Image (cartoon, rainbow, N blue to C red; front, side, top):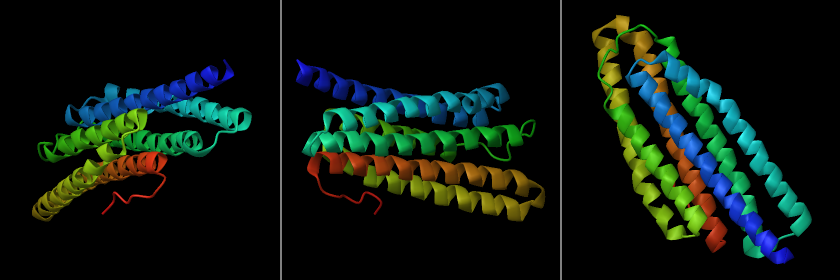
Length: 218
């Protein structure tokens, strides 16, 4: 009976990690949406919502510590729990970066966008996919799923470079665009870093199941 309770706790742990991931995905989506649609209220909601994500992280962390202390798990179960701690750390940082994007929305509030946002929303969509793939692999313990993150990460890097080049051209053509261009560059950089954290999650999942390291940031 005790073992069943332990297994239920592990299942609940995975479910909560997945829930936190969903919260982070939504934060990233709404942050970029607030920028694209010039929605200050939505941006503020993303910033305010970061506290809930932080609180949930602490709750999951406490659960992990309790499982480690009381159950003294071995081998694979130990990796499942320690991996959860690593994953929620990456997720929390991703949420912080979503908040940073929302802050850019507020910084350039009232200013018309100097260019249509096409590549930045695309970067956001890819990071969402990367996060979803990583967490699905965690829940189902299917490490081969995360190998596709290498290609996704390259795609995000390519889009970042494209955004960088376009904004540099705009700034050189019109110095009045420099301040906003710099802010949009920050956004692209934040999304590129979010993608890196998503690959970190994938690497953690691979180690959890296989017991060996896999570099997905190639």
